[in-house]
Amino acid sequence: MSPRRVLLLLVAFGLTACAASRPLYVIEEHDEMIVALLAAREEGHLTGPATLIHVDAHEDFGLPELDESLPGPADESAADQRRRLERLVRSGLAVDDVIVPAVMLGLVDEVVWAVPRWLGEASRETGVEIGSRGGRGRIFARGERLDEIVYPDRVGLRMVVRPLDDLPHIEGPWVLGIDLDAFECRNPHRDHVDRDATEEEARRLLDSGEIVARGETEEEDDVRTVSMLVSIPGEPWLRRVDRVEDAGAVRYVIGWPCLGESRDTLPHHEAAPGEWDRRLRGLVASLARNPEPPALIVICRSAGTGFVPADRVEALQTAVLRALDTFVRTRRTGYPDRGQEETLVREPKS
Image 1 (cartoon, rainbow, N blue to C red):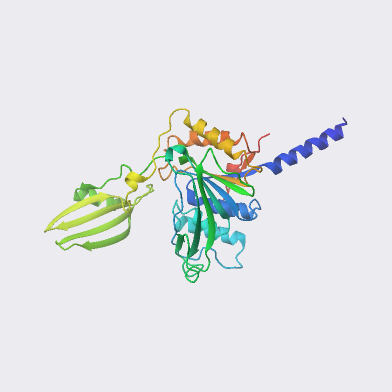
Image 2 (cartoon, rainbow, N blue to C red):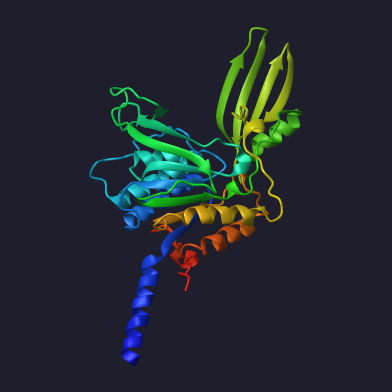
């Protein structure tokens, strides 16, 4: 074979390898996934609504309440929409507000919730409608059927729940979203209990942060409670300080707001030795049955919110990347205009 022929073959092989590689985004918290999907659409990796394979210990089907319309103006450019959504992610979306915005923005039209078997979720398939009150409004709703007048922008969604090692066959374009808490999960609220405190402790906590909300309740038996929510620098959760006046006596309570049953009902799983690799092999084998690789991959670390233990997140992320390398060629990238490209580039597998 002539040197020219060899060179042409090598060039062709290199171009094919680059074309076959898939963008890989690594994010800290799951609400950032919306920005990653928008960036992928802006860059041409996502050309229409796709199936989202949602590997996660949590459903992440929260209903956001936003200060502005999510779809935005009809003539808004893709770049402007992404920048506006970045602002919303920072100010209005919670970590479980992932699927609803993706559906309303036309990024996702089907969700496969790939659950770890330790979670105990039953396999099922449901049809869901999502809409915003008043159309392009601020408060979103979810149900089997939404009123056409109240929710004129309603969108239908097919949601499938299956074990992560037994996923359905996906024919069209799909996105792979992996939250590391599917393999190692903590309930960060499990040890969050209310406790009595001295006035000095309460004052010290109030002085260490910023009071972001304040409320007052008064019960029939002359018990008056003033509750203050405090944002502490470096802490992902708000703290609550109650000043309770009861029959002339004053006491203080320190706790966490709005936990409900989450202390006991949020998933919590400590993986056994070798469990990560075993579950990742099952996931990869299930994903590899699809005729095409994913359009893009998003890995969420979830360490800042405490769902993945900080001392295990790096090793777990490495294990996931190693498993992905066995079935798909990836290139790690950053969001546009964020100055991340140089530090987040991961070259295609040779």
